[in-house]
Amino acid sequence: MLNDCTKPEAFSRLVFAFCFFHAVCQDRRKFGAIGWNTPYNFTPEDLSTNRRQLKYFLDNYNEIPYQVLRFLGAKINYGGRVTDKKDKVLIECMIEIFICASVVEEGPEYKFSPGGLFYVPAASS
Image (cartoon, rainbow, N blue to C red):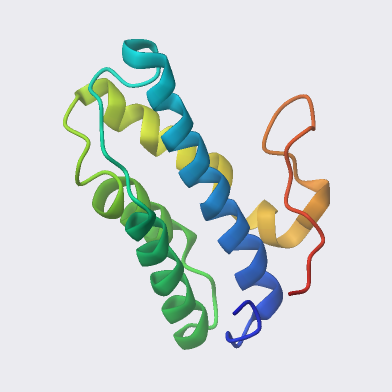
């Protein structure tokens, strides 16, 4: 699956980043109004849609369109369900941490968290 793309290293790192983003979105639901002001039903299909779109853009464009990927993820795929104004700001801020050039360029050296516990693994398949 990870080698089905013309840019397998970027694809694998960004797929993992989308998976982590999905997990954070899901996990925030446990905290009720502290996690999201309104409960949202994010689904595995949201993640699959992001993966398909990511593959399309990596296969068809020379440069990785991070801004487009963030827009699709935060405003369409996941954000299409988000109705609360503050939740919209939150999801847009969250996706910037996960879908960025540093994820691809730095790989495991780029940390998703200040403590350095969460990062993209050095996986090849």
